[in-house]
Length: 199
Image (tube, rainbow, N blue to C red; front, side, top):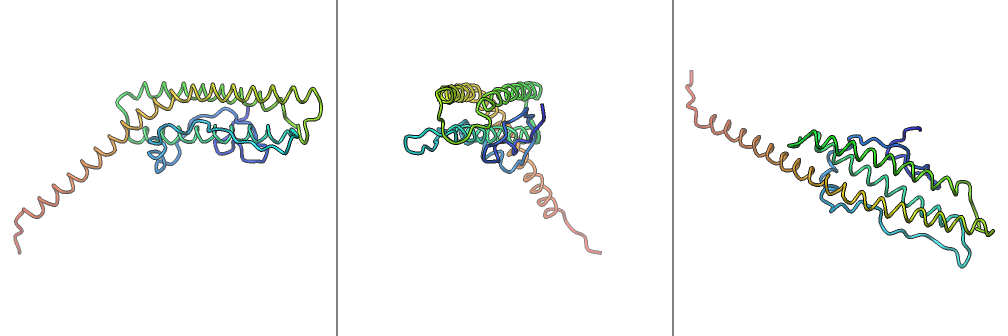
């Protein structure tokens, strides 16, 4: 299966399904903001459009695209946290690596499941105007809702674990900043207190 970057998920109107995603470091600057957002990067409530009483395949596309966007946002946020922990360190790096690898496996499985659902309505456009399509649309909606529930459940626990590592990394970063500041202050004091002999 072809690899895709996290930003590639859900960019076109009917977006490509997410493929296997390996967590890669992103920008450290955004890591803390995500890590302390309370793990709210799970898939948000879905709002889809309807056109009067007519059922359209665009409604399914809206749902699919919204899930894809949220999936990508979660992956990006985890990637940022991973980068921060890699940069600042943690007390148990082996356990952290296990968590990263397990999360990659979970994301791979979710990506495959998502692609399988999206394939069921690939190429469907316009009105849902046959009994078979009505049944298919209902099934696809049910599949997406089940996917969403399972994704939220797994990622909730995953984000708790990553947030704990992020907190530890933040503390390490603050400690390092204080140590550097103390070192600079000590050097400054030494320079001030040391007598200077003019030649």
